[in-house]
Figure 1 (cartoon, rainbow, N blue to C red):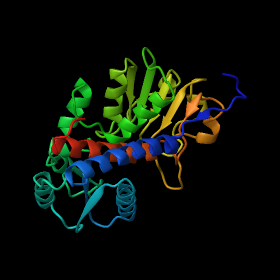
Figure 2 (cartoon, rainbow, N blue to C red):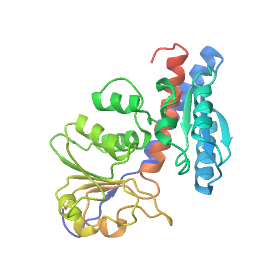
Figure 3 (cartoon, rainbow, N blue to C red):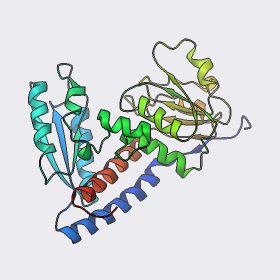
Figure 4 (cartoon, rainbow, N blue to C red):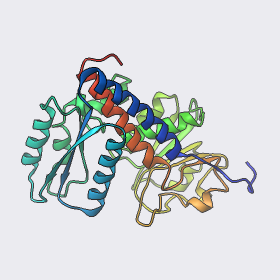
Length: 287
């Protein structure tokens, strides 16, 4: 790839719009056939401004797609046991088809225990160990939404992953680890990097595909990127800054996701799509 060439932007906004349109059409069909609209329950502990904004945005997208939403706002003093009780009640409520626990919940909450209170059939955010196992073994289930959105973007841009070296920078249970499993399922050779990785730059420079998901602004620099690589920036930091030095990477990568407008819209689109699929499953409709 010539040094003067500019990378092609991966348009998450446009592709997400198409996914949501298809989900909306399916939601309308479900409502017509059963008299029941798909319903997503959002659960928020405390009033962190960023989390409040994210939940409001997700509920607004639900409304546009014909998906009902039920919001459970819990005080910041909520205990793990109380949160588990709320999630268990939603899991047993036949009028709720999908459950989203907005995280982080606060340092006093055992998030893993809370996630596990979500019934697998309603885990439309793909956060339970059941969903992770299904992703890893290629079994039916719901994928983690951000990794799922990343894979849909790679597919949309005809990125052939077979035999390619994919480097995932980050190892969170709902982003780094599952996206590595999904890349492996497409026959990529996957390397995980993290805060204790020695000589991170040298490893990233070997990557045909880079997934930056560590939450450190502009961690991945131009010189870290192999010419012609595909760069997926799943980081989001204050000031609309990702984990990749975007402007510098433009002259090095072949394909790159912008921040915002790349991975973020795809995450929400997959969430809505999976909520509709969950409703169809629970209402006994054919997929």
